[in-house]
Length: 121
Image: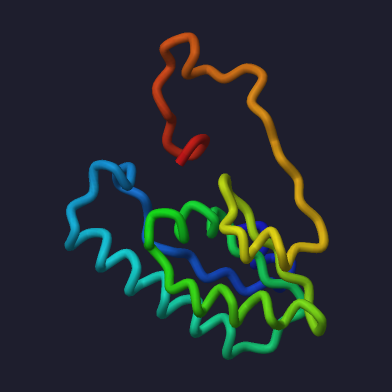
C-alpha cells in the first residue's frame, strides 16, 4: 500500500461487500462495531494527520459512534483532521476549517455502467 511505504499507519474499515441499503441490521451492527474499534485505536495513537474517509456517510447511516467523531474533531487544534463524504452532519460543518462540496458533472452510472470494485467502492 503506497501510504504505508511513506510511513503512514493505515487502519482499514470493514471491506465493502455490498451497499449499506442492502445490509441487514446485523451486518450494520457488526460494521459499526468494527468502525468504532478502529476509530478508538486510531485516537489512541500518536498522529499528526487523521483521515476519516467517508465518515460523513458512516455517520448518516449510523455506522460509527458520533461521540467518537466528536472526540476526533476536538483534536483539530493539535492535529490535522480530514473528514470526507457527502452530507456532513451539522456538527461537522460547524467545526470545519475547510469545506469542499464536490458536484458530479458526469458519471459512468449515467451511461448504465454499474459501480466498479476498486473505483466506486
